[in-house]
Picture 1: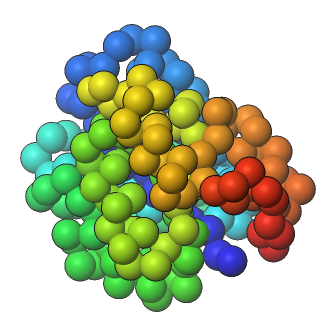
Picture 2: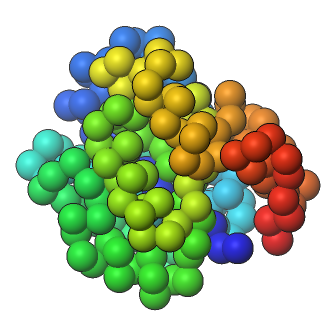
Length: 179
């Protein structure tokens, strides 16, 4: 199993449209994941931005810049789904990635559209409540979708702990070896 972190639409323009507590939560969690897995580890980072809506928020850009250039890549998309950008899909295939750790906004729009395409294309998806925020993300429909179609954690802390042990829980709550 090969993992990549995919950071979706963490642009200031979008962060302004979610509750401040959600923005703080997702920024803190995303920074922790990037620091632990991409800066301090060997996991590649793929950043997806909605074209024309500005850059990824500077707080995250500072962490992203610490990821070695050979393990980070930026893609611009013109719709909700990151897979609409053919270069994004080719890059994941080229890296041999089969599991995507998703973080970003909106959990019920762009992140979900990318997740749906990922699942349709045979990728496993993993995320946590703390890593996604949306227009109506309230452990309702979006959370149920992520739980049904991927691996869903309550927090980035428990997700990182499991990765550190070399395992991830699966959709049924059982664990599988990761490395």
